[in-house]
Length: 307
Image (cartoon, rainbow, N blue to C red; front, side, top):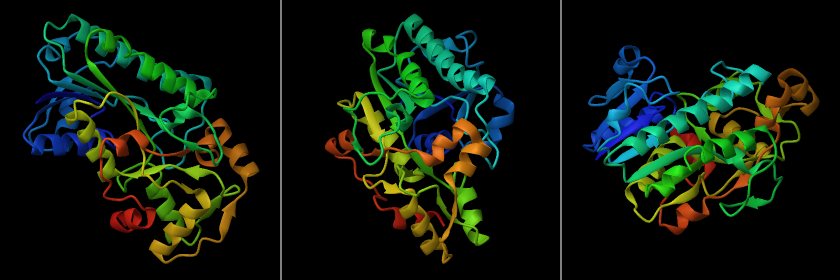
């Protein structure tokens, strides 16, 4: 297959493009700085410049491509070790980086004489909002908070593709566990310094997925023609924050009795504290129904593999 990928240098995109290229697919990553990122990508992965806002200069690549995987978007939590506060300007950047890039891809596909057969649209479990311990599958509607509104607009930006006859898959991803990025490296550091423990009450759910299963699930959705619409990309066994910290402490042979009060986290982090203090108990019902097999369905074995 000839596959176009946006966000191909990120936590998910980099291993995904590597496995696709290794499987013999022709992979091109659209990126703002091809010369800088090319050395960091797997052998065989090509790059091409784009501004993530318009279809100028790269739209010809879409014509005749078999698939487009759209992962691009400003990092929700920022790129530092600690989350970046959601200022009005940062909120605008988070939303616009997703919506404008989606609209640009739609424009390019609409103009293509030979359109891709499948378009995989990244999204997140934040789509559902905060639900406590209620089990959430793909039949649930969106929430009403900032992250929910971003996810709704993100998904809607590529909705017109369905009217063009393109099979559109929406991948609502949970917290990706990887030592190459995301929240896990910081959590591991805390525990190794004997400073790990639950956040707030610890009762909030944490819907997670091992990076290897995330990549495998995206490839599964790419290759299965019957896959269409929203899919939750999370392990089938979400855990509470309390369970997560206890399990991480067990894997690292460190105590997990400390905790950070909710009021302190909300004061220091502001609105972005919702990422760690509020959660969703999300399950991958549609993925399991299609026959996808998780290599790491249980948190303990996922963490042990990564650490």
